[in-house]
Image (cartoon, rainbow, N blue to C red; front, side, top):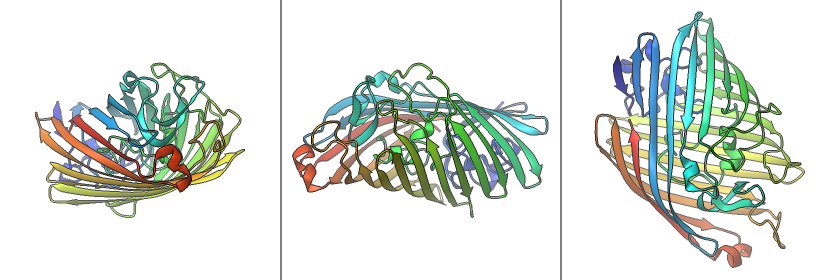
Length: 404
């Protein structure tokens, strides 16, 4: 058995071989991210790879301890932990490749109300009250999926992905899987415009890869996970999506996608969504450092309801595998900031800017400790001053243990 750490040099040609081919085609595994989504081939991929005969396996993950202080009149504070453990395995089968993917999280331990996060909306803690200004915890089971791909020609392949839970072909790489966002300990407030379907209890995706192009379509369960985070939700295939991705160079990945999401929210079961997204990710390795930037747009057309847009600009630069500086700027049109009163259902255009830093120290051959912090400021309509305050400020302090 051999072990290969996949750090910022994982995309170098010298490290690529048959054992590092992707699950869905004959290209570098570093192209693959959450679900069936692509990122730039040059992206770093932290984890531990092992070869057991014809089996290739990889394990990665992290655990954060966080002190969260959200300012303003609606603010709150909390100490909590968030975590993720990923495992993948693949093996040749009948001229193609069979793969198995799993992702687990102990986020349910933070409690059903999740953690304070100003302007965040979506899901519920008790099945009765919407979560507002809080980020819901992720489920214990974030992904349990099987894949199979088979070459069609020398430079093309067809694949199928089945997950319970899994991630459909909709939106960019999920925020905690892309390098530009993985070190940011808070979820984007644009999460429910871009990548909220990343935990779907029932999904089947079929796709075709030709050179640097990928086209795919999914049938999936539109309902977001309920408040019971330790169990499995009822599987359904009542929604659909399609995505086209193009990686023009090793440093770029572009995607457009659209989907119909049936009854995503438990508390508004009669509201369906048509979601459209577009994103571009640029990754630039230099020496033992790396810089990645993601720009994304998402639109949720609620029926009945409003047509709402959201924008994200996110960037992270890691210097010498030790110092990481990150930033995230967002704008979202929100109509869920109030569940009663005169503002109930009104649309507000809100803005947020977060800046932060993490310092990583290698503890063992495959384990590192990071210490960091971030601060956030907001630009809100004046009509929200009485609710949030005129200029709320939030911050987080955190420590992270991660595999590399």
